Length: 227
Ligand SMILES: N[C@@H](CCC(=O)N[C@@H](CS)C(=O)NCC(=O)O)C(=O)O
Image 1 (spheres, rainbow, N blue to C red):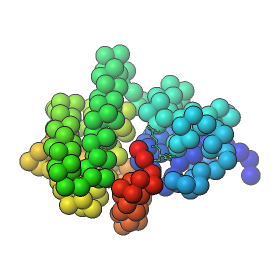
Image 2: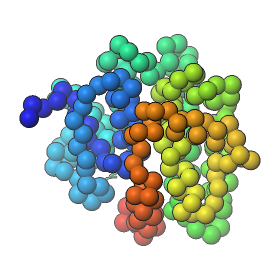
Image 3: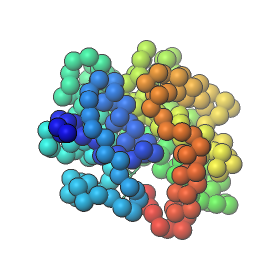
């Protein structure tokens, strides 16, 4: 079979890889998908392509590899300029979108994983931090249908992983982080984002995801894997 110009190394349950899949789908780019066996059996090819972090996702375009999901999304938008615009056009809006994406990476992802992998008093503390972080995100969505405006864009792809994963994490841990009392605008956006056709049809089965998340939680807690 002829090798495609674009290849994505991902893993079926990876939220970071899903972000890139969404960007490729929005642009209508054809690509070959390589599903990696994580966390312990990365392929030789992946380790060669991303010898720095050894993580997925890795996008290979015309033989050249690129890592880090948000960097890849910007590259996709810069390279395939026609059709759907993922980044905002205005430089200030673009910078703001990057600011909030960094905030989500630094504050929301870290605290959510903290809740997921801690117990007792330590967990109570990090639950509060996570709730505050998600409450703060409302500034970026107030008055808008999506973070990108009327349609989904860069920031929606960056934050979208929570729309699917947060309820799964909350169910496993038995605490609520994004709810109608704490972050109603964000909770409502979760539903709108998951209702976008492209997103709806790309999500892995919830029960399979639930089982995998439980397994990962034990691996984190026992120190077998780190974030
Ligand atoms: N900041 C990275 C995170 C990527 C990441 O954490 N990937 C995980 C899978 S979801 C991975 O490859 N883990 C394997 C490992 O840590 O060796 C991105 O946005 O691309």
